[in-house]
Length: 389
Image 1 (cartoon, rainbow, N blue to C red):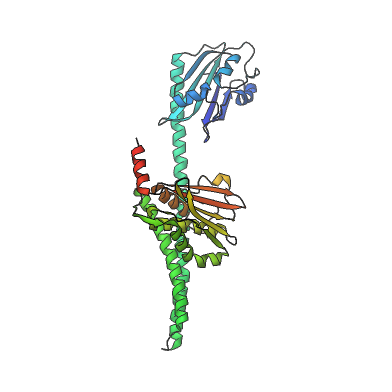
Image 2: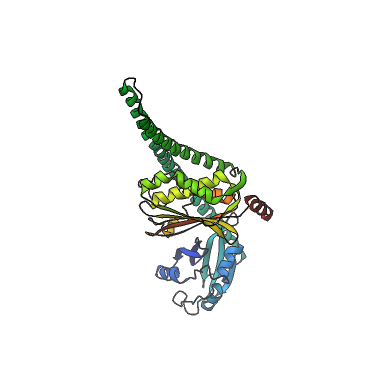
């Protein structure tokens, strides 16, 4: 069908990467692999990227070495790929699936073979269609494998995490029962009962938090989280959550500093905001154990801001894009507990309130999570609905 073929696939950055190249002359195959233009996302004027985005194929019936400059902006042709005076007929056919560009197939036919024409272009498009279908099937298969793997990992982690608070709860109750039996009918010292009750309450809160996370994920899968908007003081919410987590901060060896010099009040869902602050602080205590944690509440550019900064292990650049995913984590669950749902639920709550969450991090120097919220979540939601097509 052709003298040579090059296949390029789309990268996450929007450019193309060379996936494969083949030439009827094996000695020229490696040169073709390196020399045929592979445009970057910045080559907005290049004809290859234009074909990729438009879905329209290109046909060059007389493609000479000097024509290469027209194919991709800034490309310098290499004569060793095309013989001096050699003329090729080249077609570039986009690979597309569901209106999404997957890549390009480039087929070149060099003299003395006949020049390519409309019938060759039709065959090239059929070939590209079948190749795109194969690529899409492979992608779906890999995604299904990944989904099954994530599900199995999650079930293993969830079963472990749900059992974790039950073990000390059972031990406290058993210890309390043995204490009562040992007293022989005499009253048990109140301080002993209070210690056991406080410990049991702590474990019940953990268990309830895990169950609530699972319920929230189920709600998110069915649609938006229900919101009950009211006037809320964000600083007061932060102080209450800090008080609730004070014993955990002591166990983690973290000194938590709250800076809330100005009053920050807006129309939000109080219970959901408590959840956001709790998740961010719990995350900081987990990954920044033994170091200070800084919480800041204030206004900036017309939006309410809550930032939680730790000085812990930090997040590698390659993991920052997925830490808000469901069941995702940037570290092994063997060393750090949790269901991998906290940040995902936090992002969904913030989004439902019309806000955004950003993360800045450096490995070994900690992370800063910043939540920005509009003063009125109802108004922000109304504007978002009006902006939808």
